[in-house]
Amino acid sequence: MASRADVERLVNSFYDRVRSNAVIGPIFNDIARIDWEHHLPKMYSFWSSILLGEQSYSGNPMVRHIELSRMTAMTETEFSEWLRLFNETIDALFEGPKAEEAKTRAANIARLMLFKIQTI
Ligand code: HEM
Image (cartoon, rainbow, N blue to C red; front, top):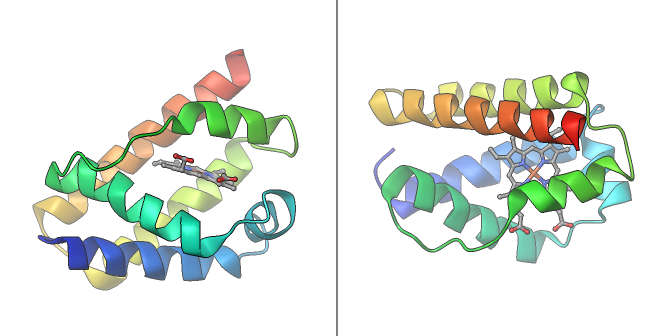
């Protein structure tokens, strides 16, 4: 994974899985009613900033997920499923140090998010 095009492939493929997933799909489709045309470019920037140092994302994911947790269950179950899909997507498309870094960063952010949701 070395370019913005790689990140876009990762994000597109990940959210294809998310959309049709029984555990977390409904959070995106029915609770947040995601506008994908808006959400996907934001996620390209988020992951490009993390993995490629692009500095194109500005936002506050923690706040958004705390809000979501007031509307629906955001527990260990949902976060494990999110991570499982993310890791599955990475492993299907990429290998090497950046691929491993992506999985580690996702796991760390997910752990922090769940912690904040549980303690706030
Ligand atoms: C249970 C797990 C998760 C669920 C169900 C979930 C769901 C969502 C939803 C529904 C949104 C869209 C909110 C909106 O715009 O209305 C969102 C945004 C976002 N999510 Fe997650 N998410 C999860 C975990 C994560 C994790 C682990 C990360 C990071 C590694 C992440 C990163 C983001 C980012 C960056 C945004 C965009 C925030 C913004 O700037 O508006 N999410 N998520």
